[in-house]
Image (tube, rainbow, N blue to C red):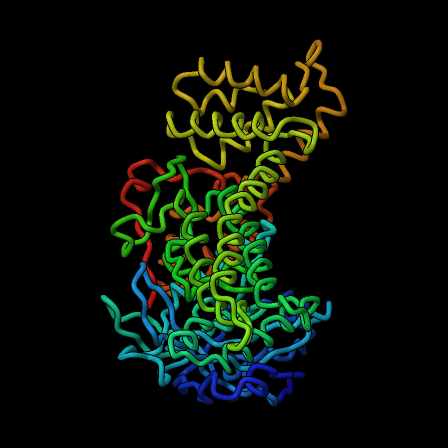
Length: 505
């Protein structure tokens, strides 16, 4: 058995925050996916992902030396309603490793069977949703967006019952940590201040060690989480990503995107876009994501209030509320600044060379054009980079009425200082600007119909080739080559209009 150099601080330092547990045995494990690049980044022995032993290892049948599988406890607001006990109902944290860059990373199973937190569920997962985690996670990584990533997917050789019997699978997920807002809510709901202090200290040492020992450390942690979430949500918005289930148990304090269940990438720009089959009221619609992030942050602040207030003898609850509210109320400005940074890159504007309000208005007017004419969000941005070089035909073809676009383009060229080509010759500076815009606006995203094609082939026909081809395309999102053209085209409008995603549980 190959050992992993685990250093399991969560299991060792946070006794009572988890339940030791063993994964279920898979009757006929078969390796479907192995992320060798991620394994190298983690400093793992390549043998762990090779041969028949790999399937047994990552199905949970034969754990690597040093693993201490535990089911973590947490609570959470799900669609606004509070559940005081959720926890890892189908997941197990195997342990932690220090990667080759000196970062601590969790290695965890998903779909490995029932735990004490399963609440009546079977604790299993199906092949399709686990391969979806691979596709979306690797796409986000290639886009430069903080994310959990898949190390391996193993088919278990058994069927799991959903609407239909489906082939089962176990995902191995790598994360900066699995600490969530819901982790804090679990102990706050029980009034367990001792464990809240312990958890706060652990989280600070894990993610913000510079804050350790500061008298205002709990408040500073809240500020650090707010900053990470502002940057993350702005990145989602600038690529048209809709998480679909932004419950507090899915808000990672590390600032990584976690849980790719009912997620999707928007095609025709629509701020009200919802694809999740369970989001009937549009709570987690595209445009609501920054508001929900602030709401979740407020729930995190509530758990920290006793610690921000100080000891019982010297507690100043009113001041603690005011301090926490200042962070929560400051979140929109953090988000707007991060959003504008991304929009400026996509618009080819030089940061600091103009008025923020003017640039925000220019970006807002561009998005209003996309919305009014149902223009594909990804291609609209991409073709704008072509227009920077004077090649406007592909952009114009996306619009049914070119007049409003032409008026906006004139304003944009003036603001971006992009002169029209002279005698068909584009300056080197303009070419470089357009290239920078393309590095900020992908051509290839996980188009929903392509994702479904790949997952259906893998699930129904045991055919992984569409999955492998799509994954290869998603790993080079900013390239626009002939072989990638099929992956850059939107689905027919009729397909997008009725498209739904599911949580995969």
